[in-house]
Image 1 (tube, rainbow, N blue to C red):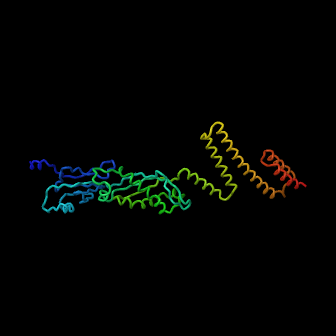
Image 2: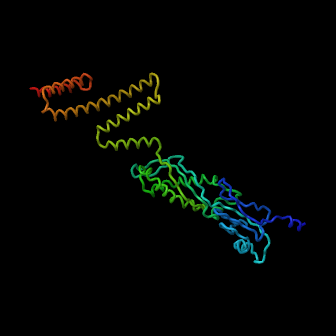
Image 3: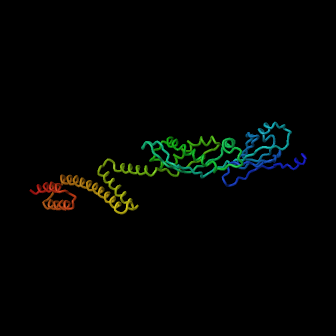
Amino acid sequence: MALMDFLKKQFIDIIEWVEPADGVLAWRYPVADREIQYGGSLTVRESQVAVFVNEGKVADVFGPGRYTLTTQTLPVLTYLKNWDKLFESPFKSDVYFFSTRQQIDQRWGTTQPVTIRDKDFGAVRLRAFGNYAYRIADAKTFHLQISGTRDTYTAHELDGQLRALMLQHISDAVASAGIPFLDLAANQVEFAKQLREATAPAFALLGLALETVTVQNISLPEELQKTLDQRIGMGMVGNDLNKFTQYQAAQAIGGMGAGAAAGVGSGIAGDAMGLGAGVALGQVLAQSLSQGLQGGAAAAGAAAAASLKPDEIIATLEKLADLKAKGILTEEEFSAKKAELLKKLA
């Protein structure tokens, strides 16, 4: 009976793996109850590594090539089994294949804004996303740390862990790059380089090599972007108070237009809110215009009064009267200017 069982036993003569196209990182060769024939063939293709595991311990690792399985090509396994050089019977061992090609177009991105220190703003919360590529660089470490005794292990199962490692090192990358936030968008290549260097050691602990990192977009949360836009606008007008007033008025007009376009408010309440905003804006604009006219009129009068002719003075008085009639100049302002001009006729 034992002889019949022996004769029925299947022996494995050729061990190989044709990698599927579904992102498999590790695959266990289906040995089951079969034994590997001594002198059998092992084929490891380019972008693959084969690992023999004996009784739970990693024995031999094979890179690309074709091997005849003997005591010469299985030195560690031979030692573990205490084989004699002339012992040529079949043997059992777990065989795992690992894909070492690059796993490209892996996505990373911030699900929530990440707070970083910034030279200009002190601290900002930014969002970013991009791609990265990695490969298995140390099959033994990857087997011990990640895939273990699984029959199959895919890139999809590892995706969440690797994306978390990328996000964990964003702050380190920004600090290492030393690039202010306002310049990050123009230096995405340098930022990506720093992010790769900051994250690569964490990948190496898993037996992986982080090959490339790309940054496709860097942005601020909407509320911070509005604040940044206002700061940029203030920087453009500088210390000119009149320009700043005009900038604020333009911002207010834009806000009212957006509110009207979005249908903010309706009925009596909406009309009241719109009227209140319009009155407030009108007061700001009128005050700004009045101050500008007063300052401009005073400066122009001082510079040109000496050269005005009688008919020009009369024409100027008529224009001032028209401004008073429209409510732009007050009665006091008109009277003071009228008296000043009439002195020039005397």
